Amino acid sequence: MNRISVVIITKNEEENLSRCLDSVRWADEIIVVDSKSTDRTLEIAEQYGAKIFRPEWRGFGPAKQEGVRRAGGDWILSIDADEVVAPELAQEIKAVTLTDDGIIGYYMPRRTQFLGRWINHCGWYPGWVLRLFRKDSGDFDDALVHEKVIVKGNTARLKHDLLHYSFPTIDVYLEKQWEYAELGAQQAFRGGRRSGALAVVVRPLASFVKHYVLKRGFLDGIEGFLISALAAYYVMVKYAKLRNLAQQSKPMALEETNTDADN
Image (cartoon, rainbow, N blue to C red; front, side):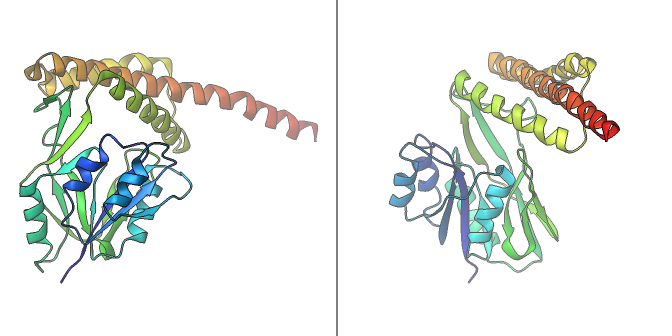
């Protein structure tokens, strides 16, 4: 019989973790990769019998890679601490992992809640995410943020939603997006990307139009407007930080050039 390992990364998730772990009690194994939690996160994980690991933090991708490496199951189900596997999705996961049809990865639709409202537009839903895959045929990339699963083989889609209780307040949203903007800028800079003043102005406007108009965010009411506006803010911060990183690197490069000339 194929065994299923659930992999979760955490940092101060005491408000979400019990709800998450309740939804995956049926799994054969729960792996928690923690990043210096100072609240009751580890205590809660222990109550559910999770295997806990606390490696040095090197980004979201490497943290999830660690969880996959530590897992003993044939299949990996990767979820976040603020996500819930609904009973219908759990039954679907159990069923597909028992088949031998050559599919090694499954995307699932993710429905996200924002300020207490389930969002149906803004490009957020169905928000397909690849979260179920065979351990011997897939793993996460090493991205600092917005990590992805890379699989070698055929994939398919599940029908039932993964529920995402991500943003109960504006403060939570802003805190997460600020962290993502910082990591996103660092990742883009390391990849050789640069940002000028024009990108700081134009890209946020394009982001708002994309979410609010093209992705029909206006159908989600005031929450749709807030999501679109805050997405634009995130893009502005990310590209401003990327531009700042480039500016900070110039004096260093100039200093190195002058030093070589003196030698």
